[in-house]
Amino acid sequence: MEEYPILATLKLLIIGESGAGKSSLLLRFVDNTFDPDQSATIGVDFKVKTINVDGNRVKLAIWDTAGQERFRTLTPSYYRGAQGVILVYDVASRTSFTKLDMWLNELQTYANRPNIVKMLVGNKIDMENRAVTRQEGLAFARRHQMLHIESSAKTREGVQLAFEELVQKIIQTPGLWESDHRRDQVSLHEADSDQQSVCAGYCALT
Image 1 (spheres, rainbow, N blue to C red):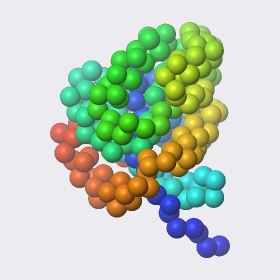
Image 2 (cartoon, helix red, strand yellow):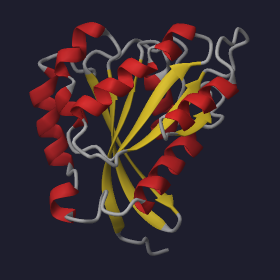
Image 3 (cartoon, helix red, strand yellow):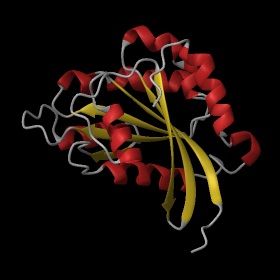
Image 4 (cartoon, helix red, strand yellow):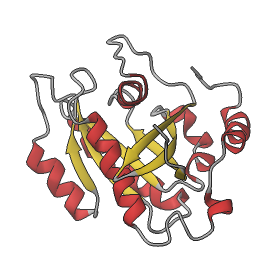
């Protein structure tokens, strides 16, 4: 069966507090694996996946950023050129939810696309000790004009849908990705170059 050509290559970011499950979401989405002992990301991780959304083949260059404060100085380069961002909190951690404003402020400071699409993901809904209700997450997302979904990297619930809805919204946003395709396209070579420049020896690549 002949495959359609790739419509675009999109740069996506995953941000949020350390321990919210960002890396687990990425591994579940890209490799369909889950490691309950997943170690914290050091610096940045980077993965590529091609998906089909609404009949379009789209290549995703996904950057998983460290949540620890000591790596925040590496952050500005991550945001450059991103068309979409997934902001993750842990529904069992009130702290990860209350710090969302800080992450949004950072996004607004460094992102160079004013119409970047934002997806808020309440992760770890498989946990019994929920500290943040679905209604609270939805209200925060609406207040900041974000998409919203709840997920579990452990059970897979909501993971694929979160990425697909984000990409769908990016494709539907005029001027976000198609205005200057050559400039906007994030080639793997380009991404690798950025990776080397911002990691400063701290990256945990797989």
